[in-house]
Structure formats: structure tokens, C-alpha cells
Length: 169
Image 1 (cartoon, helix red, strand yellow):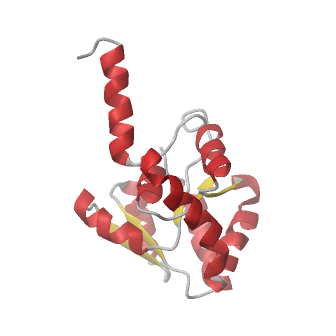
Image 2: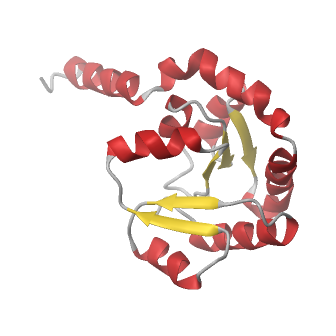
Image 3: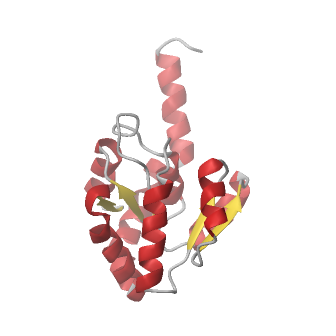
């Protein structure tokens, strides 16, 4: 529901044709990841489900977090947890365009968004960043300056406060 495996497949193949050094790491479970793992794409490694502790080691070692969600009614106003994980770990993001996430990512300079209809434009930026990592520096600096505001801990506090305000506790 929140991962567009067909678009990701196109992105992975496009990147492999452009720069064989670009690697993607997929963490999680489900039919969509099984499908991608069975494709045996040369630049994609599927790790399966991992603990939060493992994610805390895997994500900060990445250069960029990619969120490839379909753009539809369900995701239009959604803010994928992955984005919080990436920002909280100190890495910039490239996300498929949706109203909620795109507005925050672009306003705070955490990364860029890509339009699924013309996804090559956003992925060309990713390819350029792979060639010249200094292109990520302004985004990485923005993430480091404000990542605590978007950490999972902060979001959990906001959610608990919301529940308390509506009388749940």
C-alpha cells in the first residue's frame, strides 16, 4: 500500500544502466519485497525484516533515503515512517511527491521529491549525487540541524500528547 514496487524496479534498472555503483538496500517484509528479491536485480539487496536496533546501524551508513510510495488517495496526506527514520538517522531523502511529506521535506531542505510521472528527473539528481557526494551536503546539513524535531522519539511524544488531549489516557 505504501511502496510502489513497480516504480522502484524501474528506478533500480535505470540507475544500474547509468551507474553500476549505485546500490539499494531494502529492509522489510511482504509480497512486494519478495517480488523484488525474486527479480535478483544486481544493485538491490533485500535484508528482510530487521529490529529497530539493526535499522539504527543500517540507515546512518546510507547516503540517501529513498521513499517510493504510490501517489494516491491513501498516501496523498501520509508521511511515511521511513522519512522520520531517515531524517532521525541524519540522512537526506528523495521521496515520491505527496502533499504532506513533500511540503516538509522541501520546506526544511531535507531532500527532494520526485514526480512519479516524470521520475527520471528526480533519479537523475540521485545519480548526480552518487557521482558527486558534495551535492548532498546542504541537505545533510539541514537534516542535522533539525533532525531532533522529526525524530521517532519526538513523533511518539506528539502522538501521546494528542491522545492525552482527546482523553484517551
